[in-house]
Image (cartoon, rainbow over all chains, first blue to last red; front, side):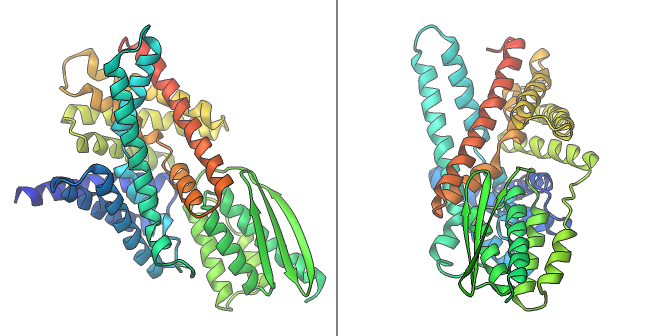
Length: 155
Length: 252
């Protein structure tokens, strides 16, 4: 029960940024709801995988691949490029707080007179997480095109 | 096919490719759409060379080549235009559109964007949900909403006045972080740092980064690297804005 509530909460609050950023990218009005659906499903899937103890990079990769598959189904139905839905849908999974912590640690390192191990630690661990989650997102999204649609166009 | 016709069709195809690149499609999609459109309109083959800010296209019919170059200026991301061009390509492929219809429909493409009074609150809500998802309390979410709405207003105003995107990002990040520090003034929230981290998330260059990696993975190395460089520069300039604001607030 608590898992269901957690997932509903997750789905709702992942759908809002998906719509918001879709509007920033000027996605036509009739497609906004599909961005929201794809974003909610992806984020929920990642939360479930994180709960079962998968590392965040792999969870993100699988969730992004799932979004890739879903958005290809939408794209075939509406005859629109799949990236139209996909980029807005993965925005809720962008590693924002990791990136923020990396940057703050680097700025503090620049300002300090000597090398401080805890700042260096924070910069390196958060930085590596940021880079690998971003990579997982975009390679995961490209997975259907790389594995299945190798020689023919998607739509 | 007469030479005039070939010139005309080539112009339509290169116009489509130029629009796709200018409004933020990935290189693989640009290549695919222009080759399919060209073949549907009767060209024997279309070859494309894409670099970071220009496009060279050669069309071949009956052993006669036409090569043309177009300069590309970034216009920001507009998925509506990309979607429209995909439609035109599919309609031409099904034989419903000939060169004349394609020309008419290409001339009618105008990039429309959502009105400011819709985008600003929606982006505020988005950043507030980021704050909620990363575990901030209600007051922190409210602060995030306020900060990112202010930031978005500044960003749209500066973009409308054609400021350089890097200057725009630095100023926007500065204002957003300045407003987001409200939580540190009085002990109204337990998580002021989450509000600050979530409010600047609207500046993450998500589309350039995804396009960059997608381009590099699919073999368009130079375009991918240049997009990656652009995304990095945008991030660095927002970091500069954040740093200045935090130093003013005494947090660094």
